[in-house]
Amino acid sequence: MENQSQISASTTGHWALNFINQPSVTNPDHPNEVPNPSASRTVVLHPDFCFDNILIAIQIEGTLFNVHKYQLAKSEVFSDMFKMPKPEGNAPVEGSSLEHPIVLKGVTASDFASLLTVLYASHFSDDQPTPEAPLIIPAFRLAQMFNFSKLRKYLLPLVEKNLEDVDKIVLSREFDIQEWLVPAHVRLCQRQQPLSGEEANKLGVQSTLIIMRMHEQHRTLAWEWSIPEAP
Image 1 (cartoon, helix red, strand yellow):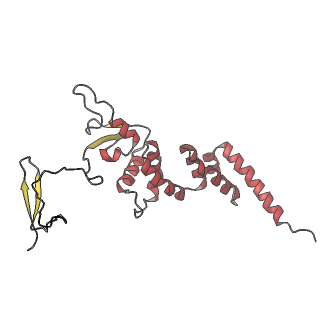
Image 2: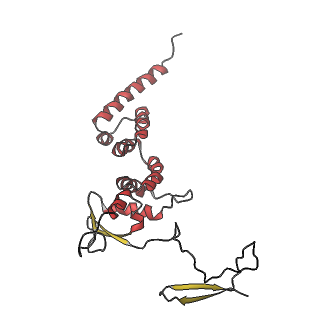
Image 3: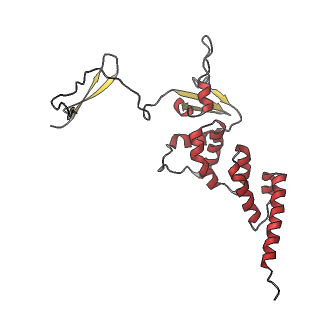
């Protein structure tokens, strides 16, 4: 007999989908026993697919966002914000509606949109498609700012892959990524072309002087090695 389903409303007002004529799952020790579907059982939340549909309103510049709370709660900054005591009386909670949003400053709407695009798309698995290059840097910057630790860890190697050495030095200073500093400086010293004016402005005086000095030493050493020995 084909499986059939039945939809019914319970006394609590919740809809229930009941499958009938399904093969019964029996106890191997008691094969003649059939589980009683009406027996009381504990209902638990699925750890991955039971989403909180509460939305948090956020205003950045002149743009409003309505974002799922469970996504923002992946950030330590937002998670701590949600734990703060609610205002007394009938005062509206910030973020509870588009009329009373959380206002974020020091962030651009376009960067926040990049963060959300990656955040909603990312499942942190090996087969996850790589985000588009223009999204990676702004998403990483805000993941660092708001402490989305898992997202930051996921994006870090992608950031390193998509940055030129000058930008790696700038970003490593901004976010204290020490492991990028020395290799990036060395590669800049070893390349043929000198620093451009734009690159020097990004790096600042100290790094520019170090790279220029090491670049000259590298060229001198390479020239000395190229001189043939006297017969």
